[in-house]
Length: 337
Image (cartoon, rainbow, N blue to C red; front, side):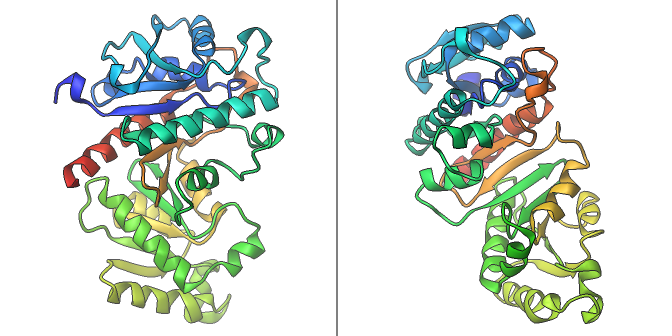
């Protein structure tokens, strides 16, 4: 594949008061990234020029009118300039409705471009939920916002860290609400999303492990009966529908077993059950994937890193992995089209 035919990825700026712009300057020059995609920034060109001045990465910013104009030079950062921030007034490390609004606008534009087929995937830098809320956009995070922009399909997140892939029955809800959401229809929905998502990584017949809700997966009913009443019957139903699934497995071992290659993906019953496992491998290396959207979306696994914004010291590894994973998924989706 020639460089000019590589997938074009729409990379959002994230919250400009955080480290996102600085990480972009580093990730875009990575040879492994440039070998698999043509990344473009969706956001403010002035902020990207300021980020280059901070990181001192030997690149230049080039404003382009449309994604098809994306170049292949590793020392040029192409930007679809939304011109929605004043760098003279930008205060790094602080929550602001101005940067929250700009972050939302970048996400919206990236989704529009990808839905229109002008870009092949969306890769998101970190946003700050408080800044987003201050700007009037009352979403729990990227996942919920992206789902609304894409017509409100049923979605789930998949965390990817090396061989560990984790999907979730529920995410941003209280623990009591998470328990209430352990229902057959939702588990089956996530099994289907996980199956299809892992297939986009090139695994044709993925083996999906299902975690239990309770300690030791209930220990035969000693520590809770959700496994007996809900989870095990749902696993049997998933098998009847043709999915390669097994479990329920104890939540304290299933993710390690998945990392070791025994399973291709594990399904967690709630947010922290899956997130702790993935983030123990290093938040600078993990990738967040939204499954169920009509577009491909990957994201960094870390936050905005306000404390180090403006210092140029941020670690770009998660963004590098998110870009590479988006390119991989784009390739498999194109091959099946």
